[in-house]
Length: 152
Image (cartoon, rainbow, N blue to C red; front, side, top):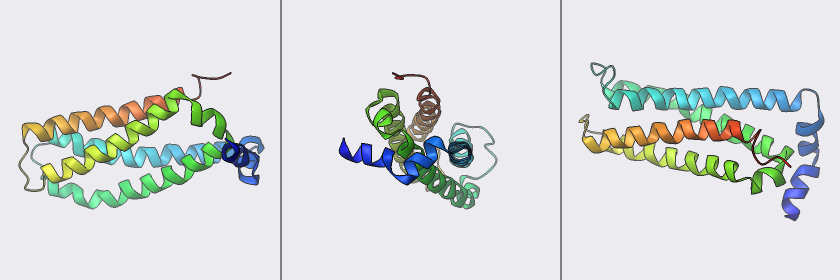
């Protein structure tokens, strides 16, 4: 608990929370990073689910750099946003669900990449792709709900 208070009272926490541009700029970065990650993941998942079946899965490999840049941007901007209201986020159930869904989404993507390594699309790969989409869309929804649920 003391660490959370320290984060909020740090110069960074105060800047995020109180400056005119801190929160909006960091939140905009978070949205851009999310678009990069979820955009690439969605393309891969829907390809595995049968859309654009003529495009080989291997063609998506070059997009992973975009997804990783977006993930890094989201991680940094998410940490900054957390600093602005650490105590509320840490104990907020919907925030905890968001983090869990992100972790599950990353694991699902990792599993999916191994399942499709030989270019064969199995039923298991399709289930993993569907689960991945649910995780990422759920994480986006939970992220939006953090602004409205659990406010005291």
